[in-house]
Length: 112
Picture 1 (cartoon, rainbow, N blue to C red):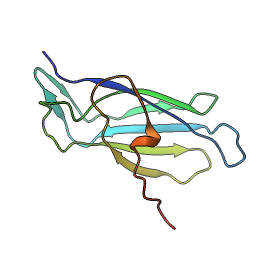
Picture 2: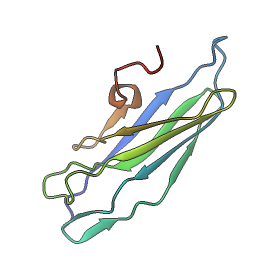
Picture 3: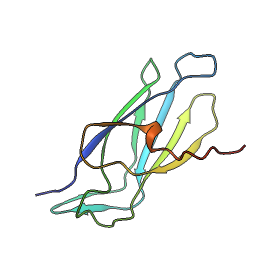
Picture 4: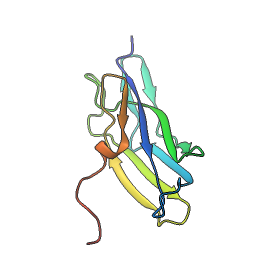
């Protein structure tokens, strides 16, 4: 039996003028992960923002007990219309449910 759990990653994106942002967020595992009889390969998963600028994407947790390798991450590429592309690396937590992407992003501001 597989020990891989999934969580729904959510977030709201707004433009500087408070309107809903448009674009997409792409998630890619940095390495194949395996737990029990299931492996997940590092293919891109692209989530397009809805008309309200909302993101909702189901992803596999990459830190479940027994998941190998233990150092995989999800690469997150923001491709938001009118904004510079940004890349981050996150760990999707075990246990299911939903988690806001903002709580998974690095808390150190970039640039200044």
